[in-house]
Image (cartoon, rainbow, N blue to C red; front, side, top):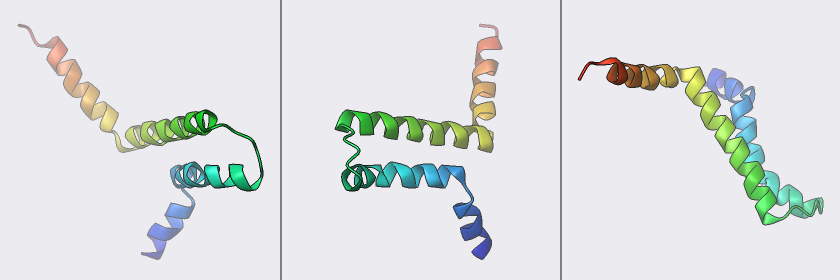
Amino acid sequence: MPDKISSLFKSRRFWAAVLTMVLPLINDKLNLQLSNEDLDRISNALLAWILADSVSKTGAADFFFGKLREKVQQPS
């Protein structure tokens, strides 16, 4: 269990998720004057990166695109 927690704190995806959650609080406390649209854009970019990084690390993209290639290459 300590290894999992240790690896969690070393994970860039974890810290991107934390930043996504605390960014509105940081905006208020530091008076960054970011609009809600700006916060949405930043959060969406971080969440998209987390998703893309997760897919590439797990090999899910190879699985899904491999299945797609098989369907495309099959003769009708």
